[in-house]
Each structure stands twice: as structure tokens, then as C-alpha cells.
Image 1: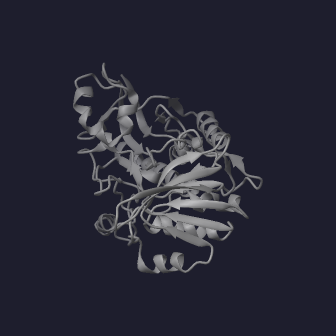
Image 2: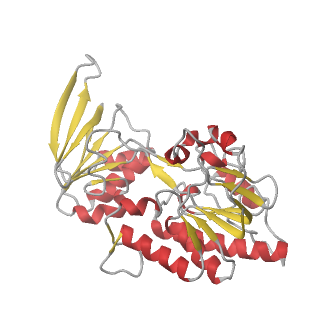
Image 3: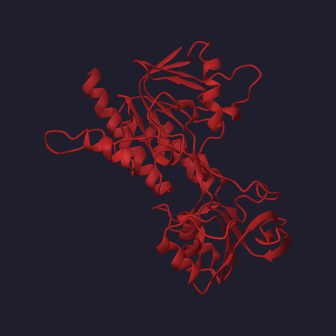
Length: 358
């Protein structure tokens, strides 16, 4: 069984950034990157809003460069998924084995918690004095034909990130919450036409966001509607929209020519294996002392030092376990904010280790 001062669970901007800082602090971290290393940016094409790349950089290349930088300073990167953890006592125990009859993909879902008991019958693979969780969150997909095949080629999940690519084009946003409203307004700054496709007769977004969308001249709302298929050869060319008459319940299907479609129907944090191990909110996000929620504020207020400063902002409910990136972030979900949190978590972990073990 391998032992380490610091284990980083998850890759992506937060995990790799944490690894860079931790490795430069001579912590020799072990990063468990998962079966699909690099996070959601591995599905992204050109990234234009990450500082330092004025001409932009392809998402996969950015992640590979971050990985190389982490390894350059001494991070051991292991392409294994974490299948169970035990945070009840230090050193913390981590399992990466997949039980016979199951697949690694099963541990990427919220149902992972149902399989951890099976895993823990096996001996652990790693012991760590401290842990940084950076497993991220995945966008809820539409689940329609053509979506997977055209993901990254017109199908996307962050219009705020990609809006500038749609100057003079037509795009659609699927959803009815604040994220959908924000995405629609971001696109409307550049696109000639934006469709908002919502399955109900009213939005659940805040009133002010609804008003901005409903009165925007470039935005058209399709009520009682759902995307039935995404069409295109090498890129998105059109979508089929199924509309239900609220009175007769009759359905009609319309083809809309456009250049992109954005799913804004929510995110699922990758925290199944951490259930019952650390404090999570009702949606499964990890709670830290800087979480932008009521629970996060409560944690922060309970951990102010004598100088009025918050101690270990990225610490979870378990002493020695930190978290960063989209697994914590309920609001921004940007590569740069994830990287910033990864930096914070590594610095917090370094100071925590110094105070507990030096």
C-alpha cells in the first residue's frame, strides 16, 4: 500500500493547479486523475478566456500542459478512479480498485455510494495524511440523439464561455432557471437569434432574469417544448423541437436551423464516493468554509481566528480534507476560478500539514 502526505482526488484545472503548488512545496503529492483525466475541458474546443493565451488554446492541450507542469515539479499522476474513501481517522484511506462485475464508470455517478461498501471489503490502495477533493461536476445532458456525437462541435454547456463564437449566428439554450437566462443573455450579445427552449409554461428563474429574457428583442422563447434530436454532420446544423399543446396534449415537431445548442438544466457534482464521509449540501456539493451557500457561511463564521481571519477556507467538515473547483462551486464554474481554488487548497493543505506534523 502506497503512502503520501497529500492525495489529490480528481484532475482538471483545480486538481492540476493544486498539484503544481503542492509539488513545489515539496509535498510530493499523488494525484488520482480518474479514468477521464482533465475534466470537462477535455470536451472543449478553443478556450479564449484563460489568461495567458491571447489567441486561445484548445481545452485538451491546456489540460495536458497543466498535467506536464504538475509532473515536472514532482507530482505522481495515476490515471485511476477513486472507488471508496475512509475519512474517519488519519491517515485517510483511499481505494482505487473496481469490484468484479462492476465498471469504473459506475463510480462517476451519484449511485457510487451504493458500491463503496463492496469496495471496502478489499484492502485500501493508498494512505494519505491529507486530501484535496477536486472531482468536479458534470452538466446534465439532454439525452437525445446527436448530442454526444456533436458535443464540442456546437453542443455545449457553458454559453458564458462560448458566446463570442456565435457572433452573427443562431443558437438555442435549453432550460428555465437562472443559468439558462444568463446563458441566453450572454449569447444575445453576439448572436443574431437566440431560442430558449423550455418544457413548461413558465420559467423558474428569478423574476428580474425572466424579465430581461422575455423582453430581449433577439431572444424567442419556445414554451412547452423539448429538444428531440440534434442534427448535423461535422457540426450542429439544426435541432428537432417537440412542442406539446397544453390544452389538447397534441405534439408537433419542428426543425430549427441553428449553429449551436446549450444545455442549461443543471450540474451534478461528482461526490458519490464521499457520501457519509464529509458534509455535502442537498445537491451533493462539498461544503467548505468558503462555499457560497448558507451552510458555507455557517462554517466560516464558526472558524474565525483571534485576528478576525478565516482559518483554512478550503477545509471541509473533516480536518485534513480540503476541496476545490466545481465540486464546491455552485455559481461560477469557470476554469480560472477552479484553478484559483486549487491554488488555495494546496496552500491550505501545506499550512495544515506544517501545523499538524512538523
